[in-house]
Length: 192
Image (cartoon, helix red, strand yellow):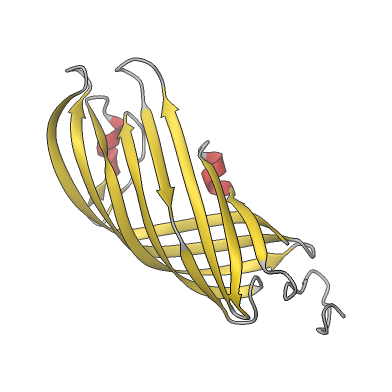
């Protein structure tokens, strides 16, 4: 028995733990620095605050650029107890970006990210939005856990457009409303 609950092979009780640090392995795969903290608010509620930073930028106007700073706080409700099993959540997100010359072959619900591949323009701006998500936490040991999570929502983007060939001269501004996936995570976390 762990903390008064029956112990099952491959299942660990996290009730005594109230704080976790984590990283999203999918962001790690894109060379995006990311870290998050999650803390217990009540027996079935937690709050997560992840931050992502990317600084891909090579000298010269003919090279790809992917710079971003985003934060996505999330409140989670666990069906069993905090840090264990199935959960649903509500997340908000905000950040800044500077993108150009990168390949994102996605054309989804009116959002065509193929435009970013061309080295003609660079897009610099900010974003804000919110969404809902579902996830599942797998206990690997008393302190380690693996999280699987998928979310959908809305993002409002406001950005300026710059021309690479004109030494970065601004050629316009625009806004975009995105609806679709806003959270996809396979995270590893350590609980304290």
